[in-house]
Image 1 (cartoon, rainbow, N blue to C red):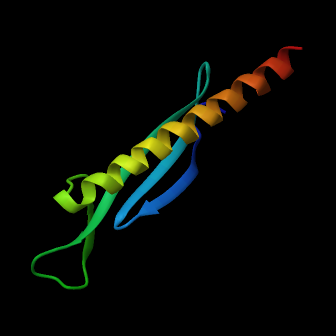
Image 2 (cartoon, one colour):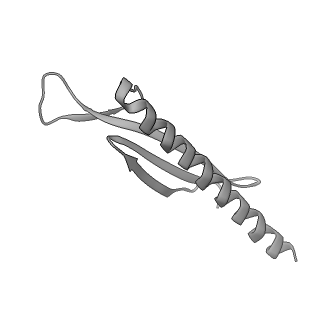
Length: 89
């Protein structure tokens, strides 16, 4: 199903959030990772937004989430390759 996007994996470290999505492309699935952190708008205590900008205390948590994303995506691609090999056989 080309163009179908699904959330494949989610994780958190501190206030940092990560989401990995799988998208079905012409040559099989491919993966994308999105890492964000929430923040409050200056004038509105109830309005939360998300940003890709990191404060200095977020850098190590972001690094860890990037490492996790790399491991999760590598494992998923390995499983995709096995699945493809089984379909061909």
